[in-house]
Image: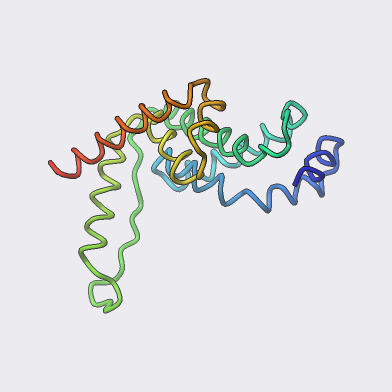
Amino acid sequence: MASAVDLAVAGDEVAFARIVETYHRDLVRVAYAVAGDEQVGEDAAQAAWSIAWSKLSSLRDPGRLRPWLVSIAANEARKLVRSRHRRAVVEIRVAPPDDPAGDPSVEIDRLDLLNALRHLKPEDRRLLALRYVGGLDSSEIGALLGMSPSGVRGHLSRVVERLRKELRDG
């Protein structure tokens, strides 16, 4: 993808379109995980692409394109959640009750997790999204957020423990 980055930095819109095609789903997934709202996730991803196009030349290491992009999307999702000053409404698609393939206990667990995630701050959801949805490691997250890798691991550990407690108590 490094050559596509170089071409896009030089103004090649087709190369940038290939980057968008490759990473758009990742950006939407991370932004959705941060925002807890499908439309806000889409809006954040779109805003992230605009930022990425304008700042692509500032990317020092084209091999780190994906972490850079998902970080932009996570930040945009966090900003949108804050700017809208509203509690996100999560649309939950539930299988019909007579669906023999759907195990109701799995759906209940998923609903419990979504409710617990909604109680977290957007910054904490961003951290979880970068790690578990974006697949970034603590060094990558630390570099993106200005934290040490051990600070990232410690913060993640506390957030995960809060989620576990919420799920046990809920």
